[in-house]
Amino acid sequence: DAGVIQSPRHEVTEMGQEVTLRCKPISGHNSLFWYRQTMMRGLELLIYFNNNVPIDDSGMPEDRFSAKMPNASFSTLKIQPSEPRDSAVYFCASKRRGTQYFGPGTRLLVL
Amino acid sequence: GQQVMQIPQYQHVQEGEDFTTYCNSSTTLSNIQWYKQRPGGHPVFLIQLVKSGEVKKQKRLTFQFGEAKKNSSLHITATQTTDVGTYFCAGPGRGSTLGRLYFGRGTQLTVWP
Image 1 (cartoon, helix red, strand yellow):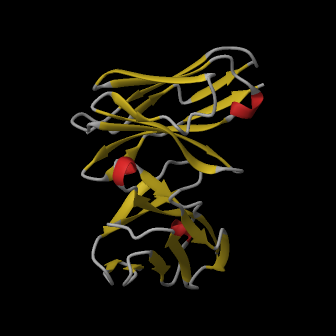
Image 2 (cartoon, rainbow over the protein chains, first blue to last red):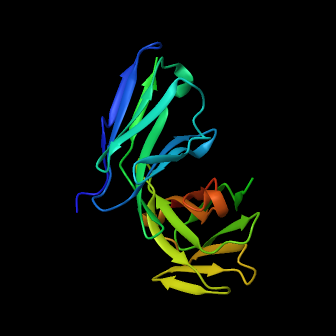
């Protein structure tokens, strides 16, 4: 089993640019979660999907953030326009029987 | 809203010393999960406790779930440098938030050789 796959692993961009993070969940997992981790705020849930449907996006910081899950094997988190305060590690996780399996994360730096 | 709190936030120990982290939930939990994140890594599932008063062991790690199912602890006996990392507890939501986990802030463990 390949585990949760995220790309890119690292992203450096300039303020104002669009950033797209990608996630491929573990096959057969029907829930997908996007988290953001910073020293200041810890691990924050941004949004999660059940069977490709967004269930709770209350953690999405503002309208600059959007997430999609067009099918069971792919999800994107988009930030447009990006700001320096968006710099963080973004994790995707998929769930089976209540246990979440995290991807390796995308380390985003917005200059 | 539902909250999960962990203490301490940081713990520095000498190799061979014991370590304990505590987790408290604002609500009764159906289960509690523990995850470990190595420096530069991602959270990895360690264990799930379901029953009131449950105690589970994984080698030098002992996990407890409180009788009221609102608190939990992780105890590591005779720490080793391989134990370094951040330990998170997490509890599931209820009702409309049943599908998600509420994570504590984590306890960052440093082990000095």
